[in-house]
Image (cartoon, rainbow, N blue to C red):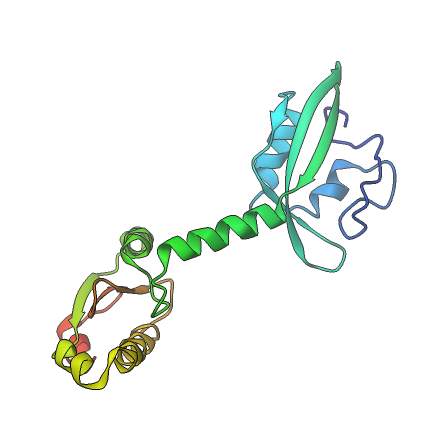
Length: 203
């Protein structure tokens, strides 16, 4: 890689869906394959003269799919850099899967307390930015212990799953998060609700 960002020599890496189809590649050509949200970071990394690993960035393959890469760069001589691209798509998928598991209640599929804290913070920031009101609701299933004792734990689980299914579809995910807060307790954080009391009564 030359410091202006042009690839002067490309060694095939065995990934025909993403690797350049010519040996020399102008910066403008390879940038077209980088996700718009990542272009600034990766361009700065590869043209700044700094050695090291880049933040993960997305590359669009010839079939239109996106893969995640990290670029490891090292100065070879003045103005020239050796760059190795490492596909980290699988690593990110595994990490995202583990994060989802850590933030999700296994029985209902809703957020757990950890997931609620994370998503509620995002919704709160978005509501602040848009000047929207923020609503927090707590839902408790009445007489749940008696229901569980009479009909059995499997029926109790099905009851909680049905309640969760209702709560999961209250609003768009970017404005609302529903979570299992305790055994038969649920919590909802909702942005943009102008009449929370009417909303709660309807729920």
